[in-house]
Image (cartoon, rainbow, N blue to C red):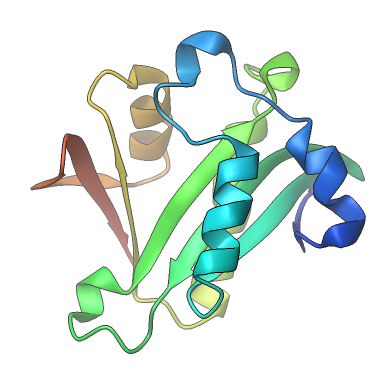
Length: 149
């Protein structure tokens, strides 16, 4: 299983916008269309990518890199991660997380932070499995997790 992150561009955007999470997961993550709008509104910080496995698009992810933010523990965020509903449960999410972690390391991050609702148990389990730990902080109604390098 070879996972690649490819920058989201006009060439692969349409395919990415067709990817969807299961209905019961929509409460946990913005649509890829809304995420693309967020990326455009935050071009200096947002880094949107399509996730490919063995050449096939399987998901979407977006990072926030704000190197000018005063708190060094709050500069690098995993804003979005989704795997298409038809491909979930096959290990793509965990494999993608390993590639995502390497991207953050390769691009100078000292940690990764993310937040999600406490009821998002499948995602929380995966994040904890790859090394994220609860910080005890809340981001509105979401738990904040962090992975330090």
